[in-house]
Length: 115
Length: 113
Image (cartoon, rainbow over all chains, first blue to last red; front, side):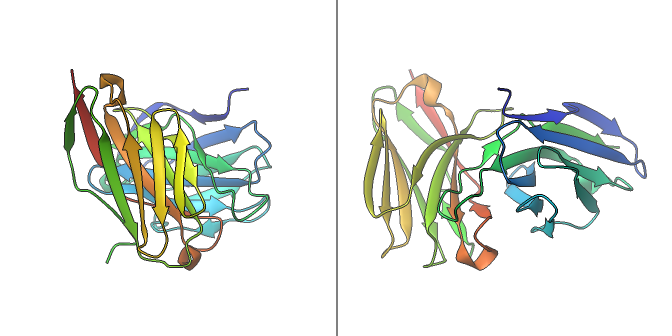
């Protein structure tokens, strides 16, 4: 049971390049999330998928797109990377059966640098 | 006002002492409260969840929730150097829908041997 996995672990891009961050969970969770973490800013929600087939914007969605490929996988795409998107990106998942049980479990993160 | 606020830190305590971490939140309708620990360069790890007023104990960790005063705290007893990390408070806010959490910026804790 690997939990939440993310690929790649590290990535360096040039301004204007595109890339997709992959996330998968093997816990049969319904909800999945993408966060970015910057020094002094805490964790900020980019997009989330409350259940398979749905996606919603979070706090900082501009410059990103997501795809909930199936129940297991949730990808984040940067179409035209900018230096402001240099950050650590975390994927998380949650069982999602009841509003009360909101524990989210995080993947190991992707460290992205945009030059 | 930020939705979730934590002690600005950093907080430094000697080994064996009690570390107290505090968090306040703005939405009175919040129902679920969590503490995550994050070591430098690693991902957040859930250590405590609390849903009802009062105390919840798990080993050396105690979470305290007071909904009337809108604060949640984490006490770490017999602090160890391995407890040195950033602690994140997270709250399920009714304002941001039931499936989302709002995180505080974190409090950095250092336990000195």
